[in-house]
Image (spheres, helix red, strand yellow):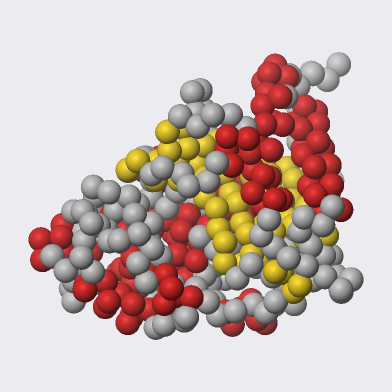
Length: 413
């Protein structure tokens, strides 16, 4: 009898050993550092995780009706929405068509160009490199790019990485963006920056830049000896499970589940424009990809410590918003630019936000750390839907906020 029991114990132990799989705390691949976790992407469904709080669900349901109405009223051919609450992806869904005149519908994994939301994603990558001690926010740019020059030698010496990420290089507003539109080589555009008269010393004045912002990609390449696309894939996209995200024209051209851009109701070609300045405006992603990224920002220590996220969102300079979208929600008190993010403050609230427009695609992302809520909206045409979606969501969410906070999980009998 004792022999039979011993044999049974040995067999059971072998089964447990063979069926063991690593936990989320263990490295998922050779590309995931051992000191951080890897978020595996959930399977593609519309609603990823039904939040237990019924008032959150009511807010989402009301917002979803608004999105569907706008699509039905032809305010956009198609759109995709991702919502993260607390530490869960609670909603990812597509609406409408990838291309007018064709039957394919937008879903959670449909790829869009995200335009200047690329800046916020690139800033997250920079925060990861800071966390790994590969770069530091206050490193001089010439430490990595010794041949780079501004028109003033003093300004060249003063220019830091945080100035690039906050649009405070001292360069004129949108300098050479017209040449970016013409697909001029990025190295040529960067060399042109040295001929510009500066409007201020580095760190003093906000002046939005695409070419200047792209310098951070060149810094990353010099620091890691890898191309930007490889760095962001291995350090950010892959660890977060952003399976459809990329930073090149070739990748979006080869993808089958892609939303086509539209000028009003007419589909247009996906262009190569802005891929030369990919850190500033050349990233492609699905709503599910953005949900995984926003989840990492709302749940510190999944990928990087809370301190790095706080540094990224710390206001660097006053930056008057040129759009009035948030006034549809409530009056804006002050707006700033952090590191790759706009920081919009209200009397009792602060929201991190960025929008993007490129090649007739529109993208909007925002998150509120205090309320632990984040949203991304991708649209394959400019217009009212993209303009109003984010403030409309927060307005609806605030109407349910007291009930959301007061609701408690009822214990099982």
